[in-house]
Amino acid sequence: MVVFAIIIGCLLGAIIGMNAPTISYTYSSYLAIAIIAALDSVFGGIASVINKKFDIKIFISGFFGNAVLAILLTILGEKLNVDIYLAAIVVFVWRMFMNLGTIRRYYVEKWTNRVKEMHKNKPEQKENITVADEKQT
Amino acid sequence: MVNKKIISIVLGIMCLALTMGICIQMKTVKKYSTAEGQNYDQNNLRAEVLKYREKYENTLKEIEKIDDELEKNIEEATNQNADLEDARNQIQQGNKLIGTTEVTGPGVIIKLADSEIESSKVLDPSLLVVHDLDIFYIINELKNAGAEAISVNEQRIVSTTAIECGGNIITVNGEKIGSPFTIKAIGLPENLVNLDRTGGYLEKMREAGLTADLKKSNNVTIPKYSGIINYKYAKSIN
View (spheres, rainbow over the protein chains, first blue to last red):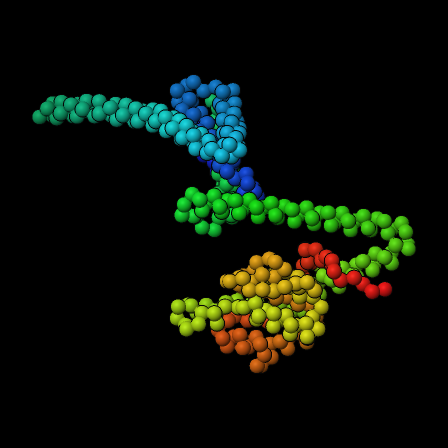
């Protein structure tokens, strides 16, 4: 269900984005940093769904709050002639990797558990077969 | 279950916003940057230039808006007063003559472009490009054939227009333009077409390997001159 919603959202967003007008170049650097912030929030949201700690209020406030804060930092950096947005990018990408790690760990564990169960089942079947063979003989 | 529904809806909407932003950003970047720069300074300079260009375009739009307003005001003022109708017509006629209004009518469209032969293969590469004098000569011939309005790459030729060589580009009205050049002229098409006569200048250019095409058109639109014509020294004699 969640996966479906993400895929449908991405597809619809791509279609709308393709047909939307372009923004002016002055603001494109702000949009870029906002995109990174939003990407971080979405990964964080997925990770918290997996951890069963998802809170909509925190998620939405993080989505907009992070984006706005990143844009404000970029503007401030432009005024001070310091590339503060680099720091924001580093933090966001680092958190993205952390969240991605959580997601990856969850699915890897799920997969290994399944493989283990299959392995557990298989030897039993083999034993049954051998037992049956012995009975036939 | 309800909770999960809400979660998926919220996540879906966020993903929608996210991908939309990414697509818009990608389109913007594609539109503005022709080639990626080699280093940081170059990219910064390019961004600066783009910002200035945008400011320039915005200012142009504002000027256009103000012009529209002026026209509207003139219209409103003259609508109530029949005496001013004459004055308005005079203004319009004058604007048309000096080239500060957009005009449309029958005429010709000439396309000039640099030669596609590689410059390293010939002795004199300067023969392979369209020069300011070529354009000057063609404009002169068009005027001789009775052209009423002429533009080069959307730059209106007015009485104060200068055409000069600026290295690998040409400046018209102080604006830099480059190959390919589109010269539009309004006038009697049958007269203007004679520019393409045998032994004429266009044929000479074609013989030199340049692209020079002339097309008749019933609907040529020539933009107005966007600069200011200001006479400081010339005084009229009463």
